[in-house]
Image (cartoon, rainbow, N blue to C red):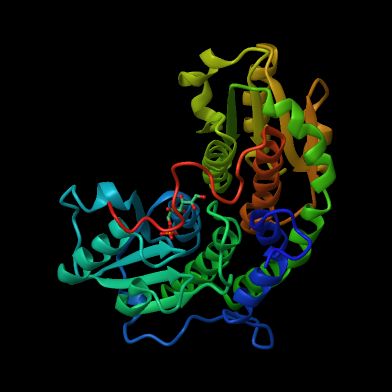
Length: 364
Ligand code: F6R
């Protein structure tokens, strides 16, 4: 049921503080100030490499996971989309952990990749939302998300719940690898516990985002920029916008802009910049200024500190609460989703059932 919401997608965007809290509840032990995974029959400390395979929005969680796992656990990670992975004769060995991410647990390519890795002797793990799904049954380790049923075709709450579980996984792997002091783990638990409240604050910008949607809705092309763990969010923002509003959109790593995409920039191309303040901020803002100098209509999503440093001349800003970089992708997902939603509504498309798309892609 949609309740008072106009679309399932909007309802599901608004559910995120609750379902992410629910998901985190089964991975955080606040009293011990530790992160915990479900019981498993293998020893995480023996994992030499993590291979993450997924499709679409779920694959962007994998990309964020690469930043987190490499940084926290110092284990190298490869991420691939399932349709490429399964046909490219990948190197997989028995000290590799193959991690599959899927809302439905039924995506044909992801499932085929899981079976391929199992046959090759790798240990398999799944971050899966539908507990009765085929992937949930077949993975050696099931790490459930508790997003509840996701009805809107565009994934929203499953995405942020997947990120929450990914953060718990990266932390556990780091501990198993002897890379995490109890103090550092305590800090992570603390940061993760702050996610639901920070998401709630992010949701308060809904009306502001709605107000700028009309301008973006007139564009033919929209570019998204992000850096580090927020780069996959640029990809997610572009995917969400194109799938429900049918506006052509691309996400780029900020530093890649001058290697080609900057040629697209003129006063008709909105540029959505996802840039929390922090060590990477200055670099992204300098990429943003290059685009501004070429007439780009910039929407900057940052916190108060970042917005202050960014200067004037922006089309609009969306102010996020100041959060730890680890949890920024979860919080910044909200304005990215809301922007796509309101632009689609402004264009009058069928938000919950976009053309040509199915909720679960069970054929390749
Ligand atoms: C985008 C979207 C798709 C799915 C993809 C994978 O909004 O929903 O890109 O993320 O089809 O689906 P799952 O996660 O069910 O394997």
